[in-house]
Image (cartoon, rainbow, N blue to C red; front, side, top):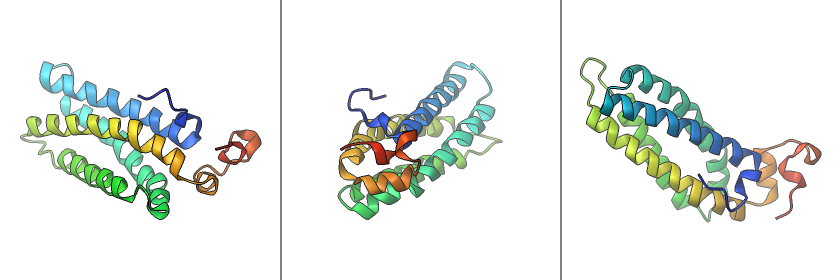
Length: 153
């Protein structure tokens, strides 16, 4: 994950990054269960989905909605939403009686690239593109408690 641009100082980006780290770890455990027999893949798939679904919903309702409204990154947001749909579609469609693990492994690979694109592309760009009022809507805490209102851009 990125550590160089300072975008994690924005509480929402910091939270989404922490969620990405947890999702990547869960995806790695699932990958190991499928490829190395290290665990119970179906239970690990459920655990991954338990992290992924609320994370994706939060991104799309919060940061992505603000970026769509701002406009300059709308194309990137649409691409990332399409990737959400693709990854969720594969993971949610796993037949429990005869799982297509190669398809899941492909989705996990796409998930890794997707997270990388958000961390190294969208998140730093969002910090530049969104005005402070947008960040205040995304993180409405007062400036003295670390909210976006107290930061300079």
